[in-house]
Length: 493
View 1: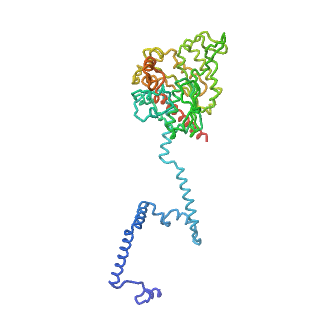
View 2: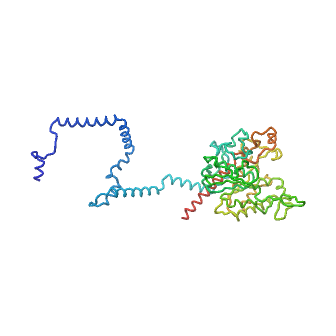
View 3: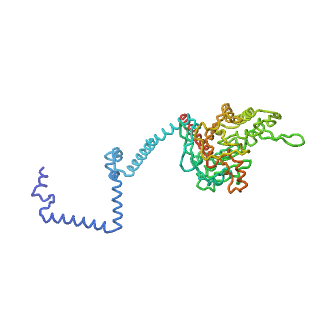
């Protein structure tokens, strides 16, 4: 106490310095002001320094919420780690940094593992969609006007048969391109070519059937091609440029290792030539044997079959001396019975040869024709530029001869294998506006135009057009199947 009094007494030699005069105080303030002014002049007078200082100041303001990280004593990580160090321990910056990094990584991992609100909402929405789509009949709906951009621009795809390419053949109206199929009780996703290519990566999708399945096949090629940046990287495997002739076609998408193929098989059973007298042959249809080509695609990843329209032709509908089983040719066989036998043969092949764990099998239903005032070879026409809007004006299925839609429905009900039935019959019934009609060839001559007036195409479809919707529904079914499979796997793990 005596020492304290001695040190801090007024008479002590050792004392706290103080400013006793007004001159000293004035000098101190003046010096501080001059120093501050010089500093400001230096910073803002020098452009380089000014820019860097200004940027530094902006960064500090921008990251003001992180200012605490500049002061480790106020950082919770600092306190958390420093508390474990004893008073006698010398502080090791490297040890501290490693602990902070470790703790930060652990916290980051925990935050990443936590599903965000957006992810939860997206997952919930997807789950609802899967549940709804699983119960929804996507073929029960109506066509609605839609001004969204087309899946691919008219005239842009070089792989469309000229007889399907209505735009290049001079069709002046475009309303048939601006209709979208809307199911009554659910929504189907818009076709996504990029997603479809990723789904098909390393896979084969094969369309098997008549020229209407070629219509659908060419649609798929164009839909996928439109999603490829380098269009030159899409080509037919054998270099074919025409796709109307009989045979097999395969388009390759090498960037994805995807092939999209078509094999003609109008009846799904073997068209045959039976030897008869004098070395000649007789055309028959083998109801007990599938096409020879079937073995070449039984291991494909997606198979899309169809048949129907050829069964309405004269030879098949009359059934006189045309249907064959073994060595026996039926003198007369009703087309309904013959069709049932053919479909049973096809179904047995699917059950015996297709690996259901690997391959998704689809069957596309009957596609309506719209001939009026005659048939395809007797002046039938389809001049309408608007779809049928009232259900009461639709063509009656009961009046079809033979009743192909009912025959197909019956065959699908008998199937033992899981085949997805793309029942497009009703949706095509509305679309009397979307056939090629007289627009069957570009730059047609006067003589050809006269021929097309009396031989209109009211069976096939313009592209872009109705078959794009068939593929959209195919895409929706594949998305649904993939989602269901993923859910099942999660439940098993």
